[in-house]
Length: 329
Image (cartoon, rainbow, N blue to C red):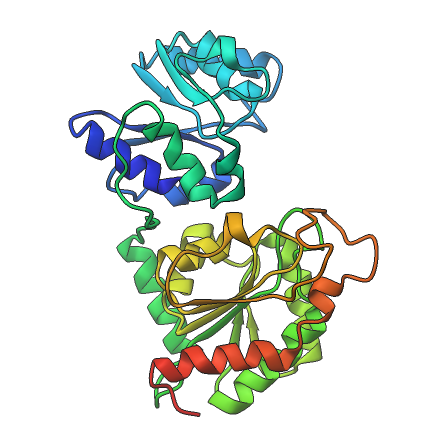
């Protein structure tokens, strides 16, 4: 959701050298972006670990002699780093006690907190007179990963004869409250596999592998568990092959939106106004309950925001998107 800001920076400063500072796991989001000249890795578990590593990172930033830092994080550390690095212009919101470290400091408009995060990020630029360049997300795949994904689909017999390529993403970082139940993902996978004569790819990171195995066990013969078996860039490429992607509110949901993949997003505890997928061919499935959005990591009661979402309701959304694409059961 930060990529529209990067594109806007390129439009405002077409001849600039744009560097993105990113933690290792998120580098694939930026390394193929045509508006980015360089990705600087924030080695938060090694060389730049908090403490002396913070000063080391500030020194590494200083050596590059940047003219402007745009801080999309609200963290105090982000402002402190760029201040210690001597970046003359440090643009960001005046939250978290950072005002004196910023130049200029953007006054937070409370209305922004009620809208989408994309608009929240873009307003950092527009608040100081810089132009925006649309709200579309950027995610660019490299040719090697695209070729790998194509071969994977073919080798596993997941395409051909009009069969759609289907994916599910049953995990989500930050606790269990954002997750629809594994047994319902398993039942959905069985319904999809049976109706569309195919198998379903399970997506996720290493922490989701066991979750994927549980779904495979509950829905025998219907899934291919790729959770934790690919790099992030290959996961992006594999999502790009999908005719339909079913997901919880997660980073991969936004990747699918950036790749303009048909998707059904199952939303529970999170603020859908802030993090909804922005592509037009997305359907959000959610239940209006008084306690949502709670933004909690784990539900302290009966998880009703997810419990009231039936397999049938999600399946109906899947069918709607697949029928738009002319896929026939």
